[in-house]
Length: 432
Ligand code: HEM
Image (tube, rainbow, N blue to C red; front, side):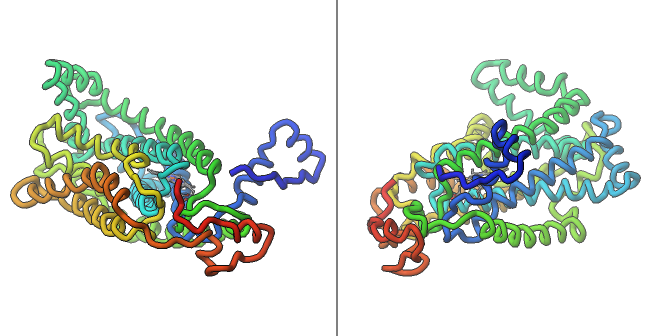
């Protein structure tokens, strides 16, 4: 959001730097005085929490990599060496492993927040698309990171997922097999596969960091959405980011850190699978191959469809359909708060995702399979049928004229410099 810079370089050094690289000015304008809607609730603290998670993964990961050995012979033992011999190694490893779960938990909350409040709608489409790209790279990164332990689950997860590409054989004979062997660096998952997974697992978090910079840039052009979905119209609708949201974010982060620490110190293996403490054995397939909890909904979709190629396509489509959300949603109103019909479908969608997560952990047979198919249908129906149709037929509830009015009540603008503009705010639904 373009706003006048209020940065005043006080010392000669500050002035010298400001004339050459106005980095302090940018930080000041974007993270201190940045005008932010006054009504952001706690769901808006997850962006900051996610930034924290990324930093934790980068720092712990870089130190872990100093002790980890990416070789099929030594990987598993090097992880145990980190756990037992390296000073504070257990803390580093558990923080990184639990951190992956916490990162996905925060990302999913952040995404559902975006869906509920229509933050993906114009003019924030690029911001949303960058978010979907981030979750894609996060998925690839977490998958590769899990493989590095080289336990039974690691090994067989890599085997199952890389083998998915072989389904391309049904389109062009031999194509899928060629791709899979190219990925493996041989004729099976092996040490060659592990070294490339390690290399990319180290690289991708920096790609995520780059995407996050673009994400926040794309956020700061239109500015934040907010629980009403109405744009900031006057200065009384907004408050400076610091101290209001720095304090709110810090408080939420402290609560999040407590939950994080509880898992690290009291239940570090709760979210993992015990079979990953068995060294990888290419000659013995585990009875059930299940991914980490954050992949379960996608895994359920993959297995719900009888054809391998269609299953793989549906699994990827489950993410790609998110890219289209800004255009599939035809509603003139952003926030679900003012959408009496869509509100029900939103919660049905949340239940659908949770149900798919549950079913992803169950064997694909009997009633589990039937329900997995029903919920897979509901997942796609949400985007491809519900979003376009409900937006057209629904009559939104009456909306406040402005953010200030939503907070203080009708006829109040909260005074301040923007009082006159706030009073003139249109009372109709937001029509972007
Ligand atoms: C590393 C992961 C991510 C980081 C560090 C991150 C960071 C942030 C931050 C700091 C904000 C502003 C504060 C807030 O609204 O919570 C934000 C907003 C937003 N993010 Fe993310 N984000 C990440 C992933 C995602 C993903 C996966 C999506 C969606 C697929 C997404 C979609 C959005 C949207 C739509 C907004 C605007 C929210 C609004 O103003 O209403 N982000 N993000």
